[in-house]
Length: 387
Image (tube, rainbow, N blue to C red; front, side, top):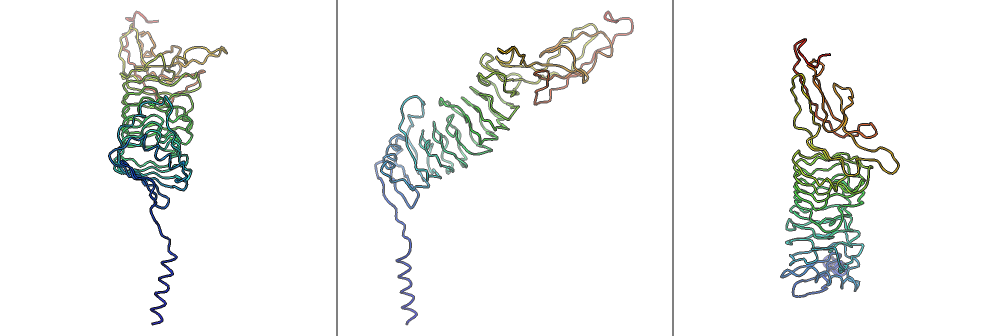
């Protein structure tokens, strides 16, 4: 009997001392239900609310000090049209978050609205259930995200995740970077590689990422501005599927030796570009007869940028050149195309290889194709060029 009484007594004490967790109702409206459970903020949406209205409602709760200890946001439901995802010009409502917020999770939703977590300055983790397909303008602008789990993310505004702290940034399903008026990852020192295997188009892509060492964009076809600025560790980018580039690089002069390899039929706006772009020649074997001109081409396209051809105010020659070796030895003709005479001798045949140089030093990060030249030797005494 004593044991039974003791057990009951211990049970009562345990119940009285147990930590009890209750949900705190914050706001219930026609289109949302907002409440907290411990340190998690729950936002349940109904009837697709306007993202702007929801931001104002959450902002009011923040102003009332009701979100000071929130560590995680769980949002469920989808939004109506996000009218603020059209421009960065104007005055917009600034939604603040406590520095305690570290994690966000979306379920059964459609997009992350404009500026929704732009001020979440300690937000480290984002995830969704595959329902989210778009990150809108400045949605995570200042958030130092260390993890992004969004398997069906198809579209993203330029600048939406500019402060991401992921060394090897890979977004498997992303197909489009659309215009927002912002720069793309400008000044981000955490990113070392960018891997967007599905990306097809971008209004602006990659600006001044000083520690960038690798870029993988195998399906990129169209880009407005690519690789703006000169602050990169990477020296070569290959765009195997590119069709159109609006501006390659920016207006800085001479300092970057970044080369972009493109297909032979790609188009670039030469008047507004300053990086080196090239496409390797498709013709690597020439046959000529004695007495003919030889025209050998290094690159089907060669762009050296509007600022790479000339002299700065100091008078120092910083031009980039295409120089050639024949059978491993430098020869005097230079340029993307060179002309040689054939004299009908066996010595006219050989291998040619082009190199991009500056200050007479090779600066290329690629192996130029070796071009084989075969000249039909004239019988002795018959060549008009014989010496």
